[in-house]
Length: 355
Image (tube, helix red, strand yellow):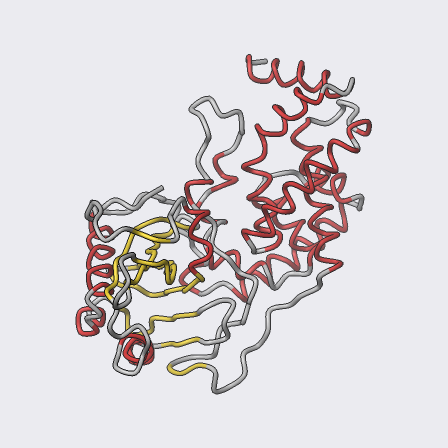
């Protein structure tokens, strides 16, 4: 047993006698991965913040049920999973099939998942070098990308919980069955159905995930060019960066665009004459979301002295082209450590996304 495990056992024993400080310290060791777990279950960053706090309150109120037979971490996962299942029972929702005419371009319309939100990469990293959380796979790119998050929203909540606990957290069928108060056979059946549904909703190119989280020099250069084209409203430059079948979605709005012509057509309306943003000056700030490159867009309108947050674009880059852009609301930027307004000055882009 290493020192961290020994220390956790001591603190877990303190929890049993109602030591509030020990309980808080032990919970904080697992807060990061518990919030990511809630995020996968719900698809919403804001709701995951609420549910991890609900998990804390439920755990403290029910601390007498922790007998030390399972690990404190497993006990917390059980509480977090049940909190999410209870939330989804109270707020049932399903991805919608988009109506014809809401999008333009190539291929069938993507599902409409209005509650989908990005997750800041800076909150996926350990708080300290000796972070006690045990498994880097919990926050790996393969199962935190927006494509994966969108796909698992198609699963019924209990199937979703089974798939996450088995294929992401890495628990056995018997451990998962114990977590969900069900049988091993039920877990195996649910997992089989969940995997089949997941494959049918993942984009073909995302079925084989790339495990690397580090952006290449080529990707950083493409990101720099995207920011430059965006800031100058240069549609010709933007066109050179997009794949022919690039797709753009805008949760919670229902709009979608597929194909380079459709995306450029939208950009022309957003930047062009007649738009309230036409005379504004743009400034882009790099960041990262869901282990993907992202860009926060700020605009300074005429007679204003500051740049105000307008949009967060999360990108998928493959083979030197942008193949997907997911556009989110600017109100989420504080979670990324970014301010709602920027002063006219400031350091130029260094080529390295913020984390």
